Length: 77
Image 1 (cartoon, rainbow, N blue to C red):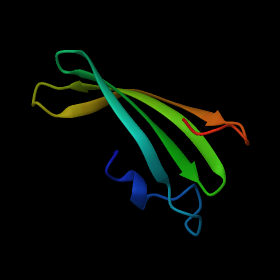
Image 2 (cartoon, helix red, strand yellow; image 1 turned 180 degrees about the vertical axis):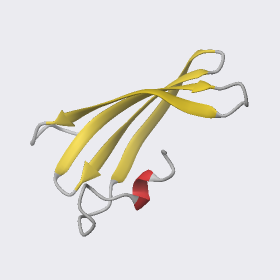
Image 3 (cartoon, rainbow, N blue to C red; image 1 turned 45 degrees about the horizontal axis):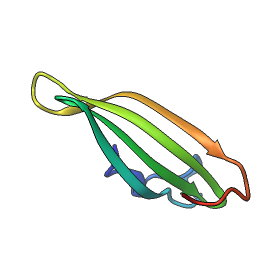
Image 4 (spheres, one colour; image 1 turned 30 degrees about the horizontal axis):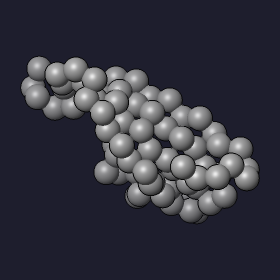
């Protein structure tokens, strides 16, 4: 999912692609990672947080995701 973000668009097929920035991952426990990053679609930006956990096959699967819109004029982290 994270690798696919730059190829996705903001809702409409002719809209601008999603850009990503400021990735940071933190291991919470063995096989569980908390990922934070920012996204931008044209002039809209959001801060995103997700929890990934390793399944029985050893692959990381998205367990939880939240996106919080950032108000206009808020400085970037």
